[in-house]
Image 1 (cartoon, rainbow, N blue to C red):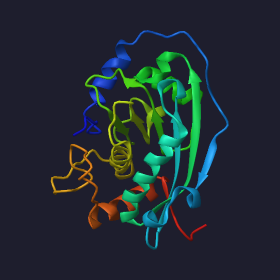
Image 2 (image 1 turned 30 degrees about the horizontal axis):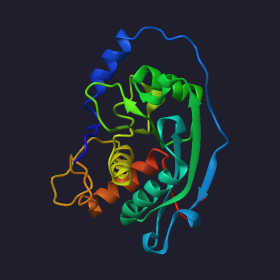
Image 3 (image 1 turned 90 degrees about the vertical axis):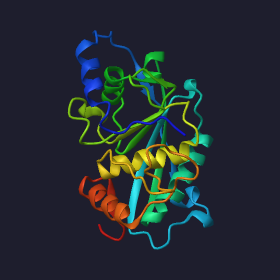
Length: 229
């Protein structure tokens, strides 16, 4: 079982942190040239979605100094891709962006992470792989959509994954669905990916969830319909 954000629960806590935070001195955070993984490299025959209708372009930003590596992130992306394939969704490209900067950037913390997002703007949806979280309450992974980013707009359509996250491919799929649905809703259905606690036995998305995911994700510009210009 995992600790992960319920999407809206941290809204008021985040606002309180912002209001009480003291100004931080300017410092550098830099990104390396992205490594682009195309769909044909990402998918294996067993995970190819059947007749995909929508495409997702993902950006993974990670701190090597926090213990994250490109090969492990590709493995997580493959697990996520297999789960999202149930909704006829294909990950078209995956950009891996290695980050370097002060240690304070390597933890998820609203005021500092807003600064990071401003300094290194990335296409959305973007997933940040960090060392830990300094948010309270603390979650292993957290999704920030449109509905819970009004006080922190720089973080809209992002996911933050800490090193404490087990089964990161499953947890990432769960949090991405929160972002694509722009909702913190959970399911009580047995085996459903969107149960409150993520676990290896929770990987199913039903047709109604898939319909909403495709509709909202497309409306927000996070998904594109395959075959349309």
